[in-house]
Image 1 (cartoon, rainbow, N blue to C red):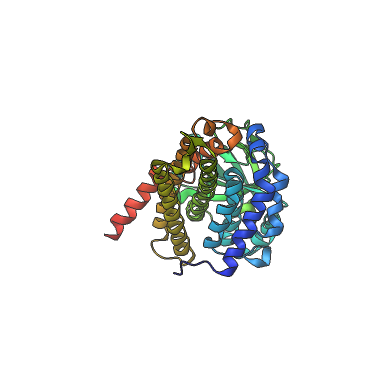
Image 2 (image 1 turned 90 degrees about the vertical axis):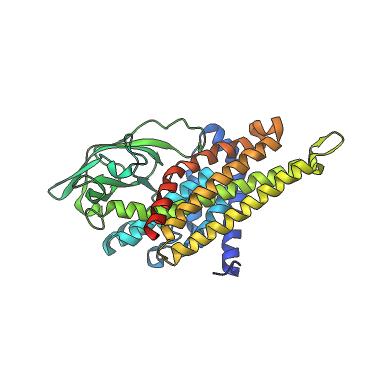
Length: 380
């Protein structure tokens, strides 16, 4: 493993960062305040190759690795973690179709997703099953040449606005082996949505319940094999966890950069607060934590790219470590801004609000600890 990025990887980061600086950052506070979903801006990532990052090239993908994806989402989240994370979910769905779908499914769905002609959402969580995801109750029954779905999905990013919903539904026995993945297009008969949730953060993307009431879809919308949906969902989450961690890292880096500049300009007791040694120690700790997060995240991405036996454990460790540290860094940055950090004008409190959910979604950090510990016990 080479710790230095290649020339191509540096160019990928700079490309994504330029897009974030020019198209996302200038409007991020406004989108947050008005809960505006900038679909037109999000779709601009497709011509840049960021709508099918690790999808094969024959269907319009960029065929990049997980390391490159962490660079992209760190860069996008520097502009706004809510927007960067939404694009990550779309990419996760596209990868699942590319990896587990039939050739016919790949050719049908992926050109629409890699061009962002259509946007895809991931539907796993339900009102009664979050961390216990395999206990989901949404059911799909075979009815002739169709599947009939009934149930409710909760906390769905893009709920009510996306065009395709990659849905985990029970087609067989209780437990993970009875779950299948089904692609549901919007609009479809029996498909409806709840109101947009009022959230602490991530306000620039819609979040809503997705409701299936005798929702019928063609039989060939079953992704891959029946009964394999839960394993597909978990495989998708390995990469999703890296992207969520990368998004936290990009936003925390933005907070630290803003704080460093503020401390050089803000004066107290006759000199810039950056001159106070106690506050310099805080800066040093935050820089160290972000650099350590970056190295660990990229190691986990390398392991996932190379399909090492401990890749899932390292993805869980990276997600836990990076999101915890980055939330703490953002919160400390707010503290160093004093009262000004609590004002929306400076953009710090938005980052704190946005990053709080990174410790919850794609598997809570408590579940990450369970994954890590269970893998350790198996290895012993």
